[in-house]
Length: 158
Image (tube, rainbow, N blue to C red; front, side, top):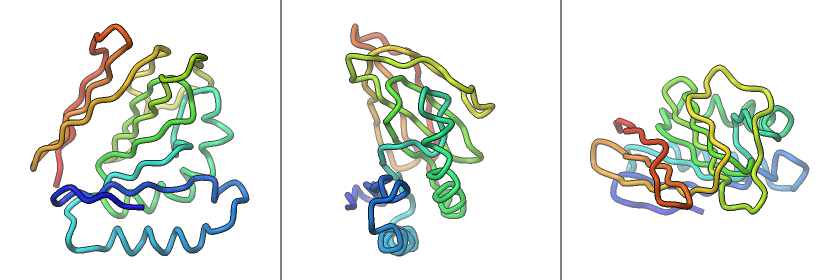
């Protein structure tokens, strides 16, 4: 489904389609239609299994998602992808797209597996992510369970 906020749309996608659940062609067609919608200047996809991750499941689980949607997002100038699955925090920069893995709400946290060159910050701690959306930028803060901000980034928006 989609959530519109001004000129930004958030698209909530089902990554299970990459793992045998029916509906991938229909979802890909819907995604292409949404990315081409002229009402929106930018799109932020939100989905479970990350397209890129250095976490415990990153190497095996992320590969089909990154192979399938990575080029699509790059072609649509997606500024940020929000994901979960791995129980850690990671911020990666893949081309022009920031990718955030936020799985720090679990009682069991995961460490690193194979560290990707695109990884900029990796933390194994409980956390949440705060997004502040402006007309020209998106400010992202990762905040641990004690309230300390341990990562901040400003993402320029087209």
